[in-house]
Image 1: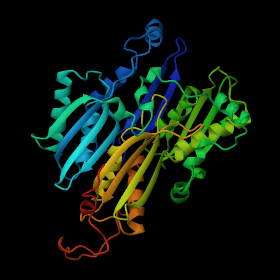
Image 2: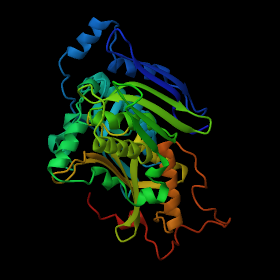
Image 3: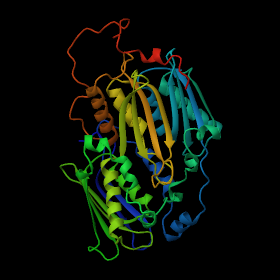
Image 4: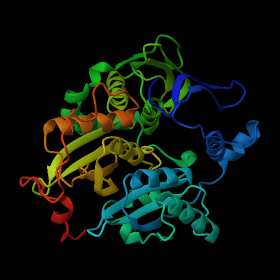
Length: 442
């Protein structure tokens, strides 16, 4: 069984004939090592779905005005460093129904950690005192330090826009999220500007060559099955978040899914059939539009995130960069920081500094804003990852954690058993990260 939080062996999405609503049926299987949070799942589904049944109730839910934009808050945590604290904090904040859209984590020379999280409260109870106390108590219990300093204040507007644009301030409810442009408008703009290169080319680089490219995903569009819908057939390797990535992609270009079936075979190959329409209720008949849709779906299925690893700051530290797309509601990919830190903990690597922020495209481009996760990583002895084999192992482990796939090799190359070297005699060719960054200002 895959190490997945949620497997989807069978998914059926079909609107009822009497009213224009969706009736999803999910057959799920949980990993044995992950506890089920059924009450948490039920409560969060109820927030984004109508609470009553019937056509009139659904009409009232859809026709009510857009909900006000969520206000950002700044969560500041000061505590002593310990292994895996960032990973545990991200899990606690997720369970508290708090969304982190920006973060800055710093480890000081005195082994103190300053964590700054720019958050949205999905319960919309901040800054009520009881909600502040609830989150701070959960944070203190998580770090295991009752005297840890924890505070929540409204986020200053200039701090939200320092590393990004106003995109993060426009986070809205799922039902109020509007696609940036329809597939037809994208193709019309591309033809008028005589541009033939898709914005997907920025995602196709060395990573697709290293870990398997788009040729591992088969996508076909058929207009002969029905006269009202275009059938998208997808065959690819099953992984965590596959349904999310495909549905986010078709929603971002205003493609309506009327009926869908997703099935995972015994060989862990996933086969999906989606009956879709354009925004005006027509089939996708334009050849170039079909090719664009196929490329976008392939990209979403094959390369949901971009991972890069390099040495920075005079090769004294290793930088891990994870880039993920936002959805049409200005939400980042769920639990990226949690999955990355889980992989780093499994490899016994330490995070010296971390940043999460939104990066907007420069110039007139079709590319949407993206969420960037940056980690400065070092070994337990304070040294960078020295060999290319270690970097490759970290790449594979992080990729496996993000996609829920199994590793084919050990996280790190097996080392011969030797007595540990004294810490007071480090290798002269590698400097200590903490000593190197002692006088840096961030």
